[in-house]
Image 1: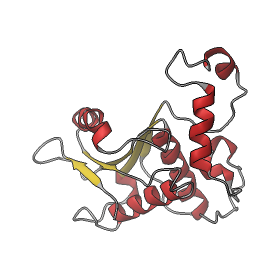
Image 2: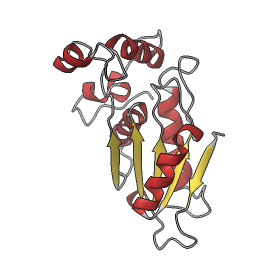
Image 3: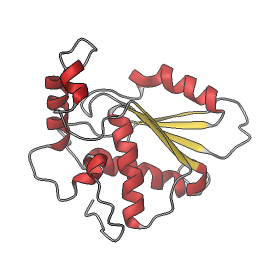
Image 4: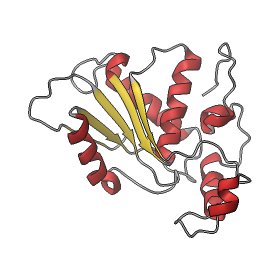
Length: 186
């Protein structure tokens, strides 16, 4: 069981659609509570239900824990966990920063497993690969804009853990292979 909060913007939503939201926080911090205001605004803006979920955090729960939690949340919604089964075409994912990474990884995970694709995704300022030698890191990595390159390395280290990844594409979606026949172990 994962802590979660369901936001229903109106007493009677015309749509059965559900947006599943994964919060940011470098896979290490954050919770439903820390993103409550943003998710409330998102629910009112989109006009349908939003399920904000607390995935397990690193470093205590390195990859694939958060990925598995988001995949299981999608399955929970599909299989009637909110009171009625919802088809994949009526489910969207959203997330900010680390949550955007998990959302994109979940979309890729569904793809490699041959599961029905979700309706759409809203990925807000996501971090999709632990590549710290980019022009952006060189120009802005000193911490003047909140996150430094050193801090991002620390977050990625927490998330990836100590064990080598068999499939880095689900943890770092920019590294995903375009081999559609490959099946992930996660």
